[in-house]
Length: 185
Image (cartoon, rainbow, N blue to C red; front, side, top):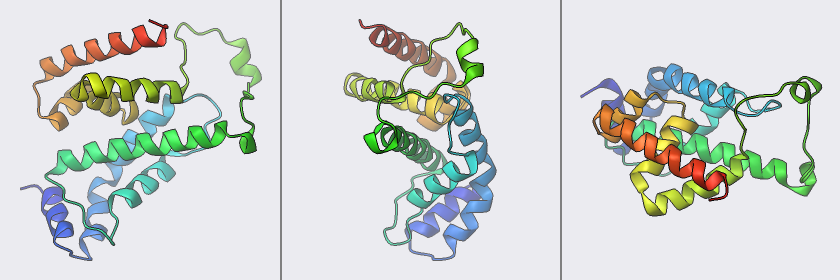
């Protein structure tokens, strides 16, 4: 049993010091995942990797209600989901009329650069991800881990408990499915 799994088990049993022991063990990995994810966001993103990690950690380690963590991979899958939800909440907040509504902020540097790869609205992607979860829950989980948590294929495969080649095939399917839907198909 790894240290993380042991501490998660202690947290489940109500050990108040366990949460403090967990953060140093997972912080660097969570921060790296958050930084990778935020690097893929549109320019002008105000949320920093450190803030994303702290917010996700606070949601995961609620001392008032004990979570049942099966393993280290279960914890990191939940962390990916928490980060996704935080980013979605922030996107919805920015879309609200109070924060500029439908107006788009365009930096001069961004306006002058023509990119090969289209950027899609985070909220549209989230809606499609919900549809994908209805059709294929495991594919949706893989997209969350790869896209929102910034994990590699091998890391996501480990968390999902599947062979890397199976994860690669599922990733290809999920990407094709999402691409088709984003193109209006």
